[in-house]
Image (tube, rainbow, N blue to C red; front, side, top):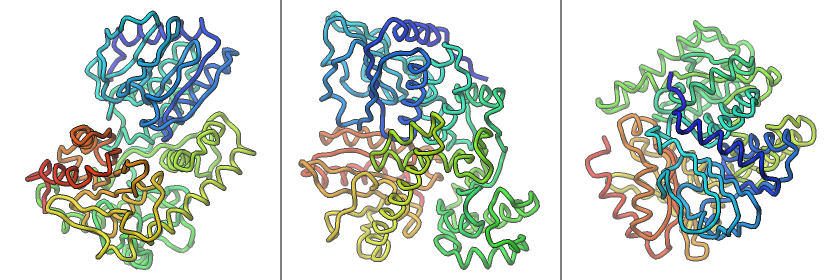
Length: 473
């Protein structure tokens, strides 16, 4: 098991001292699941220390315009890739806990008279895409205070950040966090379970119909999924049977079916990756009630992302901190609104995808400027992923929002198979966005950027050329 580097451990102790010696504290954190988890961990630390603090959730394009008006400013799950130091004032303290590629090196310090501490795994040769995320770093900080009971939140953040997508299980520093959560009695890990979303809440046939990394007869077809399960002899006597209630024998039949169907449809170069598409570790939070969507790691992380996309991040923090009354009711309302927005938005694209989706040599895309009604930029990434289930899964798909303040938001989603084959679209997005005067980045299979409106054609051309020879058709 990987160990925390000595230099990083020293940085966590230094961060602990910064917090202990400060009272006027401001936290800026990201709006996704990882950012919400990061903010929740920091909030709990400061609550337990009786510190005065504020927390604010921001998008990446907002960071460099922030005024730093507090004695200690903490950036979590962001900051490394932005010029957070340019507005620093004498006597202030800045702490960054981030896993994204840094602009500065570990010894950075400009000539201003302020304290600057940046903790980033990449300074130590540790991959921030798969080995630890923002919430994981915040947990290791909490651990220096003795708060190992927050380990489950570190696991939740890693799930939301898709840190296990490459292998189906956690590696690197994430493995330490997972072991801490297990030892605290807060987490159960089911090895090599079926990789189907909705283990505890969706009827099995519904969950199966959402499998879309490779387009199958069951994809977006619940009736066909029912037929398949009947033909496999899977016990469907109870209409609401979920994956968590299915026997291991029945799971094995479903695994065999998926393996056969996928193997028939993928290019030969992808055959070796098929098992990773079908199985992976499943995470159960033992402190949540059985049957609750919060008990399953994937569903909990989805709920946190829904909070972020609807700018209700504070509800997510309250849920993580234990509120199961007011906040849970509010979360259910957010989830309903989110599902409605997704349903109405996906219909704008999916109902006419033959005409709305433009397919180029190496990828496909749709542009919300072509629609009579807009799709909100905060859900464009989710919609892009859903649309992939209706079109050519072998190519990545990009979704472009309508221009706002001369900026376009672009989101990319793709099958995990492309990432398994070595393509990291987050890195590619960062490079190309920078070349056209924008900013971007993200994960291997899910990423995005903000680019100038007038640079869209150049962006498309560069992206298509960058992928030449890498996509198997």
